[in-house]
Image: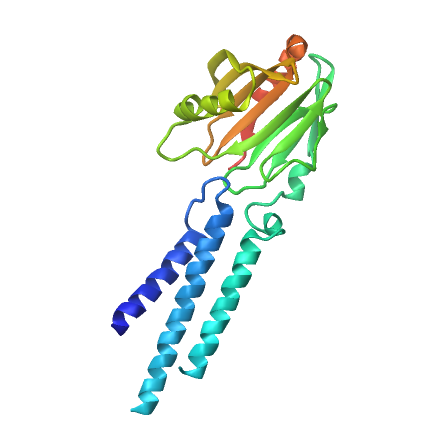
Length: 62
Length: 203
């Protein structure tokens, strides 16, 4: 389960970076592209962080 | 819940809130998307044209990467700084207007197909009394171009527009002249001169 969560987080982060850096944005779509790419990057990073922090807590308990 | 996880969660929500405001808030147009390069608004060179004693200014537009271009504009035409967006120029001259802009053409279409299947139907619905007068293929400095000439009614006055689409390495350029139909003949040479001066500068 944890691996799936990690994979989805990384996928969101990579897709956000792709949209922000490499995607050829059509005219007048700049705002929505900006929003979606940063949305994915923020969610990707925070879910990675949450995953790591939760894991650290479990290890301390063990 | 882990305290640190809760903090990350709250920070994420705050970041998303700020992102939404930054993307769609009142000042979003000034910092998202291509911006006007001040260098693009300064004509760099003047050319005297003996044909009709008109002096031309050359504008080098450097707003959008891969879509730099140059165009010569008569000295007497007034540039409208307030309405020009990135990659665009708006000009006023006696009895009419001129506009140079960039246009994104979908990858699954050609410029000619796009002009005939998307642009012309859009103009038909957008302009009152639209009527096509002429359509021709041109070659402007080794670039394929398509010129649409049409009539429309603005406040009961018959206007003629000459709209030229020039193929480009990334986006296409669109040069539009609109003026009262009765004045077109006297300015036709100038329009041709401006249109033929267009060139891409991505070298």
